[in-house]
Amino acid sequence: MAEVSGSEGAYMNARWKQWLAVAVVVALLTLAFEGTVDNYGHQYTQQALKRALVTFAIARGLNAVISVAQGTQVAIEPAGVGVNFAPGQILDPLNDLIEWFSWVMLMAATSLGIQELLLTILSAKIFAWVLIGVAAMTGLLMWRRRRSPHHAMQSWLSRFLLLLLVVRFSVPLMALASEGLYTGFMNERYDSSKQSIQSVTDKIGEINRSAESAAKTPEDESLLGTAKRLYQSTVETLDVRSYVDRYQAAAADVSEQVVNLIVVFVMQTVLLPLLFLWSVIQVGRRLMYVDTAPRLHG
Image (tube, rainbow, N blue to C red):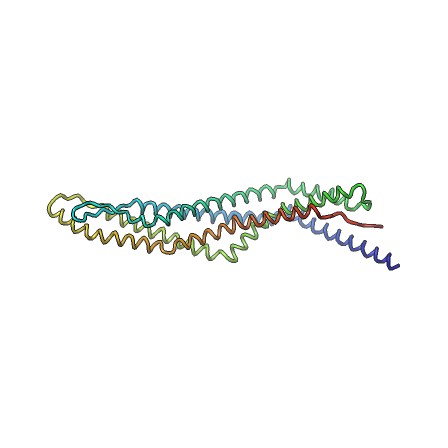
């Protein structure tokens, strides 16, 4: 009697697991058709893509004003000898960093564009119908009591269905996780760094305009004009130093802000997608070794 009772308990437990699995699959199929998760995924991915493109434009803008600063020459004539200086050359190391930053932002935008494309493909109705077809075939075999000769096919279809579900929801879930990570930990850092870089761009632009105005001196070949140029050369010698100091002050902490933005977008568009890809691969490998067929008797 105890043996029969234990057998019935195992049978009911297996049936309960079947119903639970069916409920989970039906819920996921409903989500696949209903599209709420996909809509949020699209929304968050588009927001991240917009941030990446705006940041890329800011990086190119800073690169542009630095290039102008490096090309702006201030002419002085110590002892009557003409010498040209380009105080903006002090920004050359920063310009190299901005060039790399621009490439990072371009790659980040490309990664987000790929995620948006994958979301579009996986949220297509044809993919949902494939899921329903595989789930229906799996269900038909699951409710057959006899294990032979359908056990192997049911086991394979069950694994295949689980793998399809993992792939189907991996990209939208990655978008949700990415936006949650950004909102919770990186939003303030992004806004602060973006504003700082924009402010630095404006300051360097003002210095460039000041240097360009100083470089435009009227031609005057008279004795008085020569005296004025000698006096002006002394003043401009001091100005060159002031330009260097002003460029250095403007770009004092911009490198840190650039690194902050690189961290934000590398986390969102490189590390997190790689983590999800690794997780999908690991789940897929484990599914290949899981026996998903029910062991029912009676």
